[in-house]
Amino acid sequence: MSTKISKMETRRNRKGIFFVSPYFLIYCVFGLVPILYTLYLSFTNWDGFSTPTFVGLDNYTRLLQDDLFFKSVGNTFIIWLCSIIPQLILALVLAIILNEKFIKGKNFFRATYYFPNIITPVTVGLLFALLFDWQTGTVNKILLDLHIIDDPVNWLKNPIWSRLIISFLMCWQYFGYNMLFFLAGLQGIPSSVYEAAQVDGANKFQTTIKVTLPLLKPVLVFVGLTSIIGGLQLFDQAMMMGTGPENSTLTMVMYLYNTAFKNFDYGYGSAIAYGIFVIILLATVITQILTKIMRRRSEG
Image 1 (cartoon, rainbow, N blue to C red):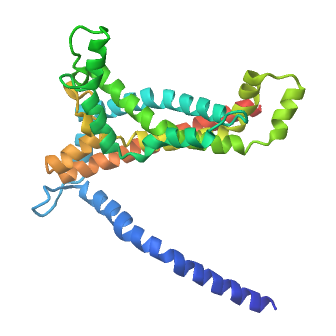
Image 2 (image 1 turned 90 degrees about the vertical axis):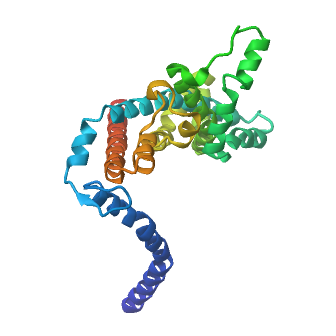
């Protein structure tokens, strides 16, 4: 009997491998092979036409001495921080409001808030570039009509404003996406927990701070990690908005794109790609460590 069961399990496993294998084959061809080839190119000097020349660690030594690369790293973190803080606050507040039973038209508001996420990043970047154009932009025209400003403001040529506009763009595009995760987490909290809090005399604010947020920690961690991974790969929106004065909006991926595909320095571009990978990996690991420390303190 046990022999028959083991044979049936073996057949099921083979069928499972058969159905899963196309994904792994496609990943190996279009994912793993390019990753490994990029690693090889990072140790070479290649312009895309001639034969790659092996240079060892020269590209990585150059990367560690590249001030423009570190500036792009700083720009990326500044834009990401200015975007993620209001983004998560807004997403969480809206999720808590839409989770209330007395709110009508929940599906309409969910779809409306999620709609910006459907639009491609390139389209959103172009839209905001047109809105904040200093000559023909709608924003300047409205402010001039309201007599808030006397002359058109060149928003995209100001280092501070250009970064804030891209941060606002990212916040507007992705807050609805994160809101859905928070809504899913809120709907997974048992109603008995809230009923117990009401019996103890807790008001809405106290319930949110003492009950809702602690139970949402897994969702908060997930959203935080995905935001780090996605935010540090910022490219499309910033590319459409331009690099700004003194490379103030030059991001890490933009620098990679310019180096590899504009300057045809694929060897150094590959090294930049792995530098970005290490930075995102370190940011993710640090976030996980901080999360574990906070969890231990709260439990202790």
